[in-house]
Image 1 (cartoon, rainbow, N blue to C red):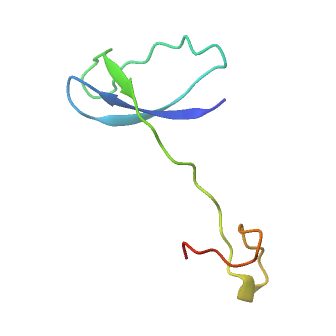
Image 2: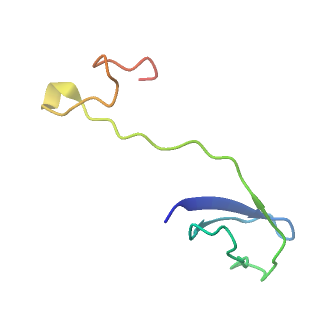
Amino acid sequence: MPLYEYKCKKCGRTTEFLERGSGRDRHVCPECGGTDLQKLFSTFAAGRSDSKAGGVSSCPTGTCPLS
């Protein structure tokens, strides 16, 4: 199940929720109980290992311009 971030329009708290594939999940803010939540646009997290320590880089060229 994918993980999505939502921001409560009532109190402003940002919370993550797991969602089923149907997209019909109804979420409730754990802070104030509000149901008017806005889905946030998030970037995905990419794992990165130090190649000097024997790990594998997440960049295809072995060096990542963002490091």
